Length: 175
Image 1 (spheres, rainbow, N blue to C red):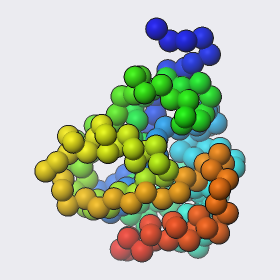
Image 2: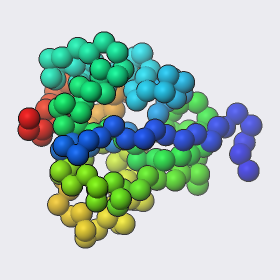
Image 3: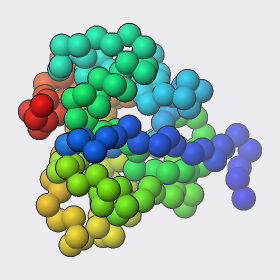
């Protein structure tokens, strides 16, 4: 039974190409992202500004941003395929409603991906608990790192501190 005010939501298809080398995983798009039908669509989410600073490019439209990620061998997806959640906060996700994405098929198809970065702690936690056991030992070559969330709800770090942590992305891709 779904509670009043709690929406069952479904995430997006991945942004990925056969040349992608790193994968950035979030948990589930925010309400603003779902409405805009865009990854990191909340105006105060730091994801796109951080990526622009890291790669010194400033694509204007969402489609240009997607192309920018592909050009830089970066894939983006979410750990959760669907869940029930009130509002946008990860803390409001009802654990019993979580369905994770199919990472076995994903990593089988996109063999160039060697590193996975988590955009926040919930993405890492759910992945380690619900995805990683299904992947081992077949994808044991994958390397993992959790980065500070780019969400506006994560105000503990400054923008500069987030950029410093996210440098790992730029250092991991080869053009």
